[in-house]
Amino acid sequence: WAARPALSTAVGQALTQAVWKLGDVDLFEIDGMTLGDEALAIESLGLAPPGRGFEVYAEAAHINAAGGSAAGWTSATSH
Image (cartoon, rainbow, N blue to C red; front, side, top):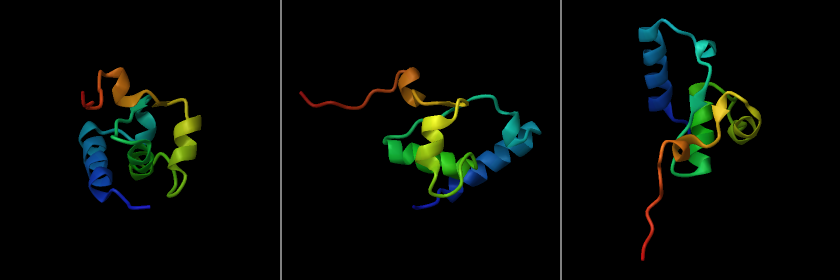
């Protein structure tokens, strides 16, 4: 698995600026191009240990499995 250090850094900075801890966030909406991207993001956010992103994604109630789809994301299609 490849780490996402930029995401980890950005989340850390945002939490510091908000004076929050990761546990203060009630819901995470994860949006990636693939489920693999989303599992890696979950690991990079610190919501799952390395290699367990898929498992946490499937089981955690505080992660919106609809992710970007709920926000209107659609993939490109060809005609």
